[in-house]
Length: 545
Image 1 (cartoon, rainbow, N blue to C red):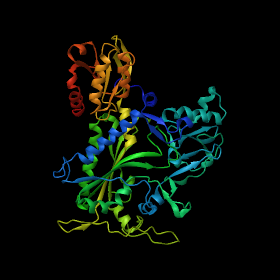
Image 2 (image 1 turned 120 degrees about the horizontal axis):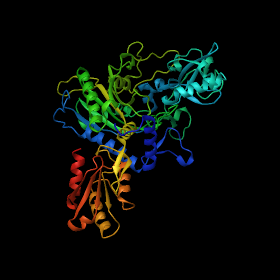
Image 3 (image 1 turned 30 degrees about the vertical axis):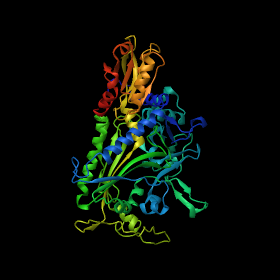
Image 4 (image 1 turned 180 degrees about the horizontal axis):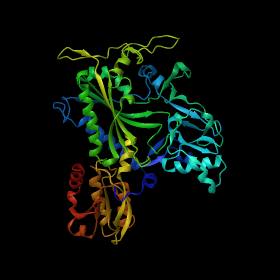
């Protein structure tokens, strides 16, 4: 990525551009903000909508139901669903979220702050026989400086005595530290202020109706998938789809993250784009490979690539007890240390676990994964719906519980990845031909919030009237922007920062032959086209990109 700044600075520049150009704002900013929640501005909402539209068209509408798509084991169908955010609380008990959907957290008795146990790391520091663990949660680029500074402060060392402090070579996770009394917490001044780790359920609790006690308790959904599973029979009976088929859903989910961080990467409110693909058990391995590879191609085709995108198969010890295969599509976000990747999407082979759980109840993986959990020690037995969620093939008369392949993508993480990938800094000539530094978002045209901007060169000689005519014609078909304020070079730069792929300028020549200048954002090439051809030219360029 030639022309881009170092990673830490690059991330700071991206965050600043998002605020300046109206992609993202801190939620409730005028009241000091609310951590873990973000608002999408005028350009951000268009970017995210374009990502969701591209996903829906390519995954749900973009295949022929009568023919097998390229690489698919057989022909299949796709349909959609929009389930509610609040569902029957028993769903989360049978799915396992009520018992298992948690992170471990630690509290600091001194600073009163709370941390995710797996996100606290640090180094062992030793001076004159005393050994302590200096914990930190700061970004990787600052870890060395932060740990050394705090260790020296604890041991009351002066800068000239710094070489007498011994620091371990590598950072260690807090979960590998046995003696918590020797830990200096991330924001503490004294040793031993961190509590032992304890479970913290990530679901947001709410209440339905007039009852505010446990009898009215419900949860905001932590994922969209369960709404699909509990509607499996409804979809089969109402649409006449046949296995193999997929149900797709785009919707909001909520997780009460202990420490949301890294801009929009880890938020408490986010949007998912999920598919639950139902297939025969005998062909599920082939379908898993198909969806894994297809989803990877989708990101590549829309502009993510190079050594910043990878497909990583989970090791056996990472797999859920019901899964025979899971792969993550990961991106090297600029806020991560060099060589590290963050998850964009997971593709999981879930077997028949989910449908059986909602039929029969919560399963016990420690004994027999097909046997109900025993009601012992006074613990509740999470009963399933009792409904038959098996599938009967009307051609072969076979009855089976379908296996499920789940490609689960985050719309917000995808938007963040496309923003990071698109951001470049280079030089471009201004209206006087002088080369000046510019920031540019090189979005794929399908994703660009604004497809074209229309400018009159000057605000006189009838140019604004013709420019507004061109703008009105384009506006009926495309997302376009009109601007007549300031020098045309500065207007170009504003659109470069917004990621607009094409600019159309009405100038003196337009008054003679009704042609306009078309400027390409990436190549900076300019050509003249007829006003009557503007719509078809822009649509062709976007469609062919």
